[in-house]
Image 1 (cartoon, rainbow, N blue to C red):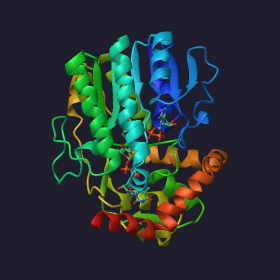
Image 2: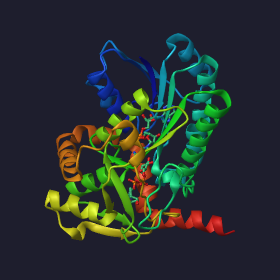
Image 3: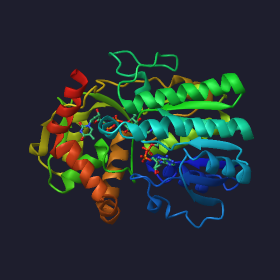
Length: 349
Ligand code: NAD
Ligand code: DAU
């Protein structure tokens, strides 16, 4: 099987590439990645010279490049991870989100339609269902109700993929996973940000009251689910991929502090994220019943592994916290009230 993976230098994409190279010796992978701020070839250092792996530096929005790749490689399947993946950045600067997440998906689907492909996996998110009142859990037919520019762009891309299945027969499958965590995650997301700030004895910025609920899945469990869907999923279908581990953000932060022996006084409650979804909750009964997948890593084990990885990889951390990262950090945290106030004021006009 020849795979075209997009965004394979990011957090989840690189875990998927490493998994496939380790467990599927008869698969080959071409990884198309633009190396945006979160793309990092260091994440793939362990497999970079493997004969079944090839890296192509480029943008999924570049139709000419994408078409040339399809012609050269004739992939049997596309696994589409490439995205602007961070909600806070999508609020501060929505434009790149729509360019990559919507237009990029369109360019890939068009190439898949023209050249033919055996599977097209659209890697998506539980955020497309929006906030869900307890005790409900979204199944795959739950209405879409995205709140942020990020989740709206993912919902749009999902619908486009499903429309390409119905209209043109492109064998697209949409997967929707909950919050991933694990090694190599860019330190803008909750868990790596809180681990690294706690390690450095800096304040841990919790949005609003911290009682928002997320479902956590260890990244390798997500990647095994994606491989299962790639190999045995049904075209035109949607599969939810949940970790069955619902926690408030505050509980996650407290567990990190406890594991590191740091005081709770490091927690700093800050202005809430605009449009912040209160609770995500999904049922993954379908993938469990149809394809026999289930998560294997419990949160305690996964969090301990993740914390250890950040403690042991301070060099990686230093190299990803570039000037661009520090600028983003200043906008989203140090100048938070001014930046968010400006956005909300404009909204009110
Ligand atoms: P990430 O930000 O770590 O990685 C994104 C990758 O995409 C990077 O390597 C980046 O360089 C690449 N990229 C960005 N724009 C590109 C472009 N125009 N062309 C080519 N490459 C480009 O993100 P992640 O957390 O690994 O998420 C991967 C996918 O999984 C995304 O589609 C995201 O929506 C989805 N997802 C993420 C989570 C999560 O918890 N992180 C949960 C559910 C779904
Ligand atoms: O649910 C799946 C989604 O999970 C993916 O689709 C996204 O790509 C991924 O970024 C993630 O989105 P979230 O917004 O849920 O993740 P994030 O790590 O940014 O935030 C998790 C929760 O923690 C959320 O309720 C906001 C809160 N938070 C986050 C940060 C970064 C804080 O309270 N403080 C913070 O500094």
